[in-house]
Length: 272
Image (cartoon, rainbow, N blue to C red; front, side):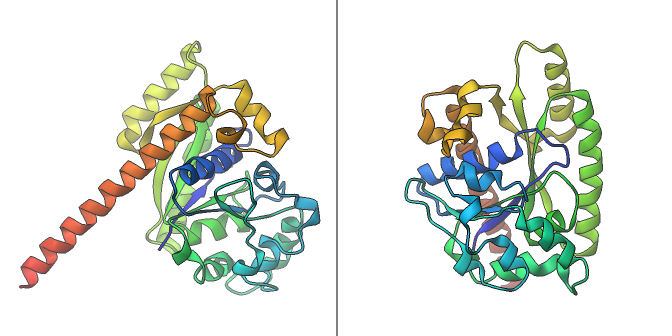
């Protein structure tokens, strides 16, 4: 069964979509089975994965509205090593329509039930807003990966996001956790960046990924070619950083599974 992670931050321009595309590609390079879901009406994760968002016959919009299954909407682009459940501007209309529907926050969770066992990781690129689309992602997810720039206003936005995660956890999804905080667009020459980075690690400790994503021109160029950075320029600093992040995530998951197995073994021993 896949580990489902929402990539979210209500502040735009923090590298959320960049992280969604390139982390999925980096995990794909390790032979993991990965699905990327584009829940942002801008459809940038779709185009950045080489899928034409304007010519979609079926997308996440139709899945949320019950007009098709997730399986029917998933595409497997030839040139990348992960699957995509694409999205586009139709999601804006879907959001409006869902507001009057019952169980609207569970549409994505229900849809993923039939395909989750095919993947090891499912990442959901959320819109830069805490709306019904993001809520669907949070209800579906095991955790939330939060990309953020190391700047003052980013800390204020993080507080709001954490409150929302806690509310969802208390109300509809008790398993939801902070998967990790990822420092993006990092400039080592910036004193404030180092100060904010230190505050994050002091407060959130191991929740902050050790990997830091640097500002990188090649990373910024890759989406215009419809390619993840590991294909566009594998030797670039951006590519190396996302491959390192994938390795860190895999190690964390292995540790989590080992700890869970140990707990289960202890429970079985007590039962005996």
